[in-house]
Amino acid sequence: MAENRMDKIVALAKRRGFIYQSSEIYGGINGFWDYGPLGVELKRNVRNAWWADMITEHDELTAPEGAPQPFDMVGVETSIIMHPQVWKVSGHFDLFADKLVDCREKKARFRADHLNCFPIHGEEFDGEDDLDVKTCLGFVSTTETVEEFLPQTEKKGFVKRLEKAFGRDKLVVGTHPRKFLDLTPDERAKVLAPDVETVGTLTEPRDFNLMFETYTGALQSDENRAFLRPETAQGMFVNFKNVCDSSRVKVPFGIAQIGKSFRNEITPRNFTFRSREFEQMEMEFFCHPGESLQWYQYWRDRRYEWFVKLGISKENLILREHTKEELAHYSVGTADLEYAFPFLDAGEYGELEGVAHRGDFDLKSHMEGKQCKEDGKLVVEKGPDGKPKYAGSGKDLTYFDDQTRERFLPHVIEPAAGCDRATLAFLCEAYHEDTAPDDKGELQTRVVLRFHPKLAPIKVAVFPLIKKDGMPEKAGEIYRAFKKAGIAVAYDQQGAIGRRYRRMDEIGTPFCITVDGDTMTAGTVTVRDRDTLEQIRVPVTELVEHIRGRMEQ
Image (cartoon, rainbow, N blue to C red; front, side, top):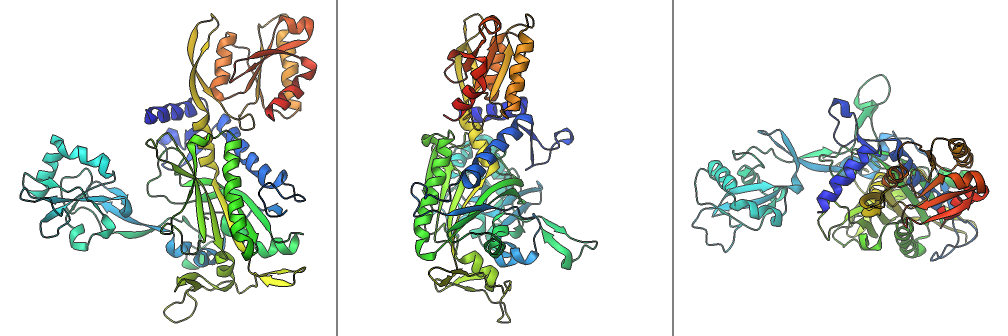
């Protein structure tokens, strides 16, 4: 059911011009997407709503609800290509990698931590310990879960494939898989890869760096090697001192940025959820170490409420605190905002945004060198020669409070949202099917996108009821009034009025205005609400302000 719903959303996204596969006429390129005429407006509205909340509508004079005190917020736009040392000091160069496994026969590629390897035994297996190396003949691997995979082991085709691979019949499949990474080299040589009939076609795991490489300058050499940024955060960390020196900001304050990032994902999937090129909306909030836990609580709660205010149902949104085992070595605490995307099974959630308490890891690393954890403390990581593995800038990135006369290295709270994932979540949440009367008064299935008015690509549509009696001309005047007011508007005079309503419902337009005979005599129009289907008469002279007021509700 959920998969069917997601298929409908993807089909609608293409049919109505929200999202297209990149380079589709050439067969497409996996992990890259293009936003169409409506999609670009939807995504722009998501960006604008985030930027307004963080920057343009932020009140620096009054503490927002739940905040310990007032604070400043500023924005930056940093370059996609940065000095290579940035990524070495931040840890991305060494750690931003997955273990990759190739299948020589199928030319398929897998993440080693995604391959579940089920032990294979002969019929004499007693069933007590299905990972017993003495009785294990080998392994059959899959990217599926135990619950998804085991029912398939009873199917005739699977049994034949297993018998051919291991050269004997009456085999028993164990129920306790191990990850491919956890197997010994000898055991890996006995693994049957997905969809093949020969054991031992998988390569040894190897590091696959997720950063896209490029070169600056005329020569392609190691000295000129650079990377497309895998995140926007580092651009804000390396500009911390510049912002402090050039702006009248005092700790606590935040630096916000929206921009493209690039990760060479091995298996991009689930529409725009996991892509190789994506846009991030990140903010780095610098605060006093003694106040950082308060600010962490504030920002995780505030980011949750932002999604709720813009239409995400609380039933589909959770705020999940990471366990100790999940935390990065530098993290004091991390909470994920997770959404019940339709491509997931019931009860499952996918990450929408992370709010991380990063401590002083980033500023300290860029000041002293790459950090690692030893005996529970962060220290500069040393190379074989005893010197810092990757040296920092050597610049003083501490902050001096001229009122308390204290110098300290600020802690950082980082709310990091994916603009594409947020856009996808709003699109999935908005999709509804219900019934509504057609032009003849008969109930018909209606597809409607119930976007919050702030996010809707088109806010209002203007229809002349018929193409004569001055109605098109009057509708044109109203259309241009909305254009002049900066409100996204559409004009449609083709087809029956019910069909025009449905076209606008399907793309999420909150309000439709119909110019009819009463408009020409009484100066009023019909305003139809997308969600309630209520229709009211509004004077033309009050129309723009009426719609503007309803958009803010």
